[in-house]
Amino acid sequence: MVLLTSGQVSMVLSSTIVFIFTFLLFLSGYLLQQQTVRGLQAAIKPRLPAPAKIETTYDPHARLARRPGFRDAAYDNLLQETEVRWQKLGFVQLVRSHDEVCTALMLFADLHRDRSPATRVLLFPRSWIDDDEGDDPHLVTSRRLLRTAVRRYKVVLRPIGPLRAAQDSDSAYSLTSIFSLADFDRLIYLAPSGLIIDSLALDSLLAFSPPKQLAALPADPSASKISTSFMVVQPSTTTFKELSAARAAEQQHSFSDDEALFQRFFPARSSLLPPSLELDTTLYYESRELRSLGDPEAFNSTAFFGSTAYVRLTDPELPGPEYDVPYGRMVELRPDKGEARWAWERLYFRFHHRRMEVCGLDLLTPKRSSRQEEHAVVVENGGGSTEL
Ligand SMILES: *[C@@H]1O[C@H](CO)[C@@H](O)[C@H](O)[C@H]1NC(C)=O
Image (cartoon, rainbow, N blue to C red; front, side, top):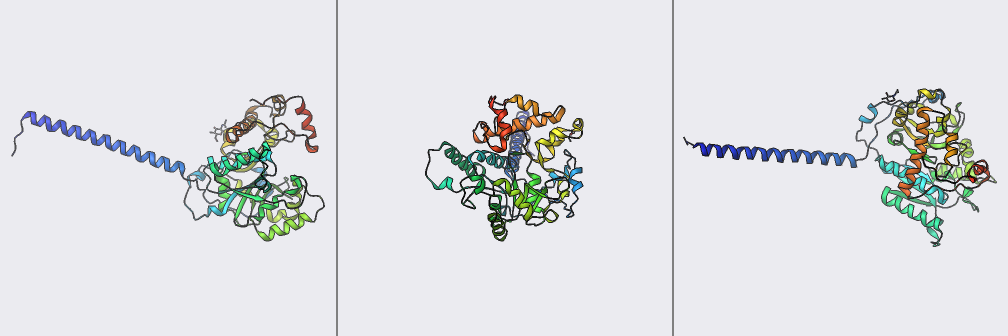
């Protein structure tokens, strides 16, 4: 038996204590690091949606009865790995003029922020990359934005040709082109201009909705016609040829006639999105709806922003959120009071802010066009910046 002096005992004791504390320090550092690594992994990992229950019968009242602002939290927790081929599923945007490029880029930026695993596809006029007229400032900006789209948001660029010889880009390009992307299984088209509040429900739709040539939302409460504002498209060369032929048969066809063409081609009884898909999340909402709420007092903006996937900023009196409109005009148009007013203003403000943040662009000066004659009058005496 070894006898230790009290000095030796305290030596052993103190070195043991030093060892224990060093070890604890190491352990806590190690655990902290593991936690950080896991946090980083979680932050980089795409958010994968869970399968949704889908009823295939269509009841137009189900959509009308939905409550904006009602969400099942279980939806988010059910994240699981599934055998979904995300490279075959995507979000598609179509731009025909330089003014539209930033709005498309903003949607891709929203998807990037939400860590959507789906592919992002941008259709744009081939002439933008063909000719070398690099001195048009609008073209220069568009090319810069296209590069940003690829580099920062991993967007797949697909140049398209005009579907018919036409002088103006309005009749040269058509939503029909989406069907030509036959290397994709399914694509979601969101009509501009809008903000993706949360892409998870949209990703879920891409991954799990039943296969259909086209699934859209109804254009009116009676659900007799489809709308082209929100579409899940299954690209197919056959459909593309048929639609192009139908379009070519018309004498005059502009971009705004696409909806009528689609309505003739895709009957509502077989081409509507099942409303059960909107039980947890409102997939598509229009800002003008905030101005005509049945009971504005009952509107809950927290619930609204927590359960809406995409909001399109469209108010019939305004040329679009990318255009500069005097603040006084916005004040006239905004919802009367309460949280609806706050939500409406916040959406426009957020859009303006994102435009600068994502594209580095200010608001546009509204154009005079026959369709927007009534807005142009309003805009002429203003032009001040829209600061909220
Ligand atoms: C609004 O909705 C949120 C989230 O759904 C909820 O926590 C909050 O209590 C609601 N507020 C009111 C006033 O009902």
